[in-house]
Image (tube, rainbow, N blue to C red; front, side, top):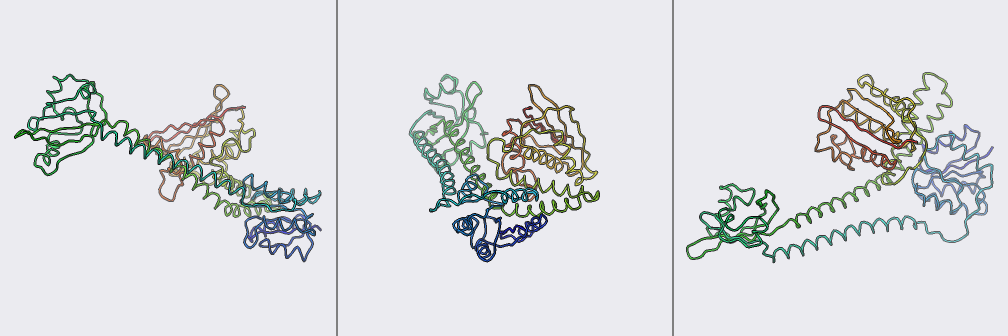
Length: 516
């Protein structure tokens, strides 16, 4: 009877693998880390080792190197079975150490057994050429690229701040438009030619006006309150922003430097007016860049969060999938248990897909392409959610017959539909009508529509609903990532997503995908 060494710091994972392998006629022994595994290997003979990567004392990479460098162990097949380190570079590094397989948790029981059987029936990989292998190389390169990108963004931001400072000095030294108005009747007594051309008035017409006709936002009382400290000598200058109204009805933002001029007993006011249109544009661009940098930081935080929790989430999903698979193989013909076990497995697969979707949020392209039947996808989603929602949600299906299939990732598209349906159910407070429809479009397109009878989305929020971390749900009830991930997936499939919504009328989301 072949004997397999299982190495994992998570006891439930060890128990699950033991149950699967014992059920297929294999003997097993278990260790909680690489050091324990090497001790067991010195005392017992094994035909294959199945090891996690992230473990205390000695991790899987160090174990694999030591295993393959030991002449007594080097020809024993080595399988990595891990819930983390899932980048392509990690797999290449593991195989360079001499590993025979790099498997990602969770796999169904039959998948694990199939890999074990395949390796026990062939010659294992030869050990790597002796020499030092820099384990942190790939991670170092990744971090360097990330920090370099953020550093470039910060440098752009500093450059913009310096540009704004230089622009402010130029404005302060430039007398773009100068006017003088009487301290009593407030009518203009002097206007520069530049001001006349900018405003579109001739001098005679403008001399009949006062600042109240040209400077927006002031009424007589407010303007008098502005001038009073200048009249009484309490302050020698007032600086404020307003909009200057031109003769053609247009306006532009200005900064006004206003100070009193006393000529004998006659009081006038001098206003130096600076056009700040460009400065406002720069400030808007500055805010946009700050928001972009914050957005990048948010995505970076999300990526780091996904990496930190993916290991634990996949460890939790692995025993659910594995034990449910074992139960289905034993009791799958029992009509009372068959549907229940199927629902457990489907929900666990969706959980695994959600973790994958979170870690692949910023990736481009379709990860696992195939032909996808949208009608079948709709029916599968209704079956999964129907039992949970009960009779309070009325499902209405309008599925086109003979609908062309689409090219895409079935797991990702299933996640899209599941997310949209759950959002719709929440929007209806779990009571209402949820309509799902498919239809062929023109020019080889297929449309999928999800419509609810919920409270709808206010117009001012429609432009924000697909932004990462934006949510209209109460704190603790949503992450703000659902529609962002949905939109990212649809774009990666060369598709489009449109949202139609009216307050009190519900929401309809239409997805168009290219057909086969």
